[in-house]
Image (cartoon, rainbow, N blue to C red; front, side, top):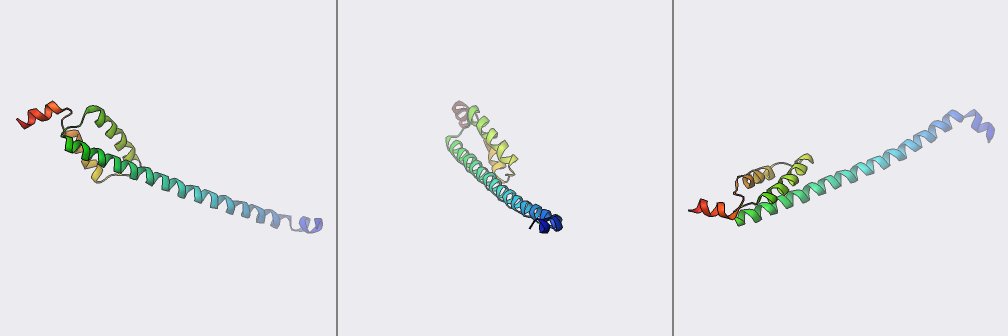
Length: 109
C-alpha cells in the first residue's frame, strides 16, 4: 500500500484536491442562492411596505415629516437592492403631499 501511494502520490494528491474544491464550490453555490433569496425577499417586503404607506397617506391626504423620513429610508435600501419602477413614482408623489392636516385644509379652500 505504501509503495502504491509513493508511486502514485501526485495523482492521489490531485484527486483529493479536486474533491475538496468540488465540495467547496457546491457549498459556495448554495450560500449564494440563499443570499439572493434573502435579498429578493427583503426587496419584496420593502416594496410592499412603501406601497402600503403610500395608500395610507394618500387616503389621509397628507404625509407627516416623520413618515416621509421613514419612507425615504426604506426607499434608499429598496433602491440599493435593485428595486425601482412604480415605487419611485409613489415616493415622489408622497414628497409632493403636504406634511400636515392644516396644509391640506388650506389647499381645499
